[in-house]
Amino acid sequence: MPIDASAALAAEPRRAEIGWDHKDVQLYHLGLGAGTPATDPDELRYTLESRLQVLPSFATVAGAGTAAFGGMGAPGIDVDLAAVLHGGQTVRVHRPIPVTGSAVQTSKVAAVYDKGKAAVIVLRTEASDGDGPLWTNDAQIFVRGEGGFGGERGPSDRLTPPDREPDRTVERRIREDQALLYRLSGDWNPLHADPAFAKLAGFDRPILHGLCTYGMTLKAVTDTLLDGDVSRITAYRTRFAGVVFPGETLRIRMWTGDGRVQVTVTAAERDDAPVLADTLVEHS
Image (cartoon, one colour):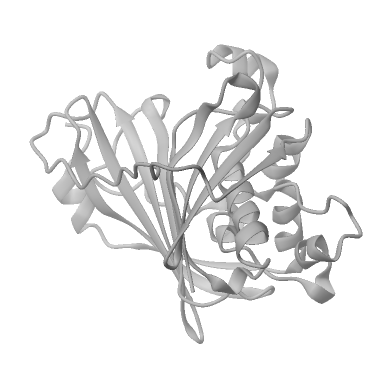
């Protein structure tokens, strides 16, 4: 059996030392579309080193983007990467991420679920520095054709949007070159840059990274409802429901609640085709 859940869960965590500085943070923010207009004081919080703050979603690229798939080489995990999809992502920050820092990051398989025709592997990365825990990342990896091994089906994290109009709706255009810039933060998959490779994968042209959409959405929520203060964010999760292309527009609908914002993200030009679903921002 390509997936041995017991072996994967029992494996020792992998350990790596990572580091970053203000240039890594600025590059990440620019890859999300920050800096428009370039002199806007609200945008300078993401682009100017003397005013810089760090979006919590930066945790997915710190250390050159190892967080999402850092446990795929664990014992018991032997799968065809062509059958692998990044199904969802959760980031929980334990305190604000410093602009310049270093950390010890551990990666492990936290859960393996049997969905029948597919398996879902939860890869967990935890980062700590000298002052204690910084963040916990959970990447939900969907592996087609690897279910049916008799494991637990796992929890359902589906969120139904409230039965009312959103409290806020904003649109964010994706620049034509945005995937080319975002990939400099560590995800070099040619699917996001090479038209010939994208065609082999079944797309007319390169698609935007799901984690770029993830970061763009968190920035939109922060700027719209949290006064641009990233330190208020405690956790953020989503399910990747569909693709979006550079040049398109994200339509981001937000419903506010007690310490939480529920979000849906669609592609405006394609009749609101789903892009992100089951999306929740928790905040103080």
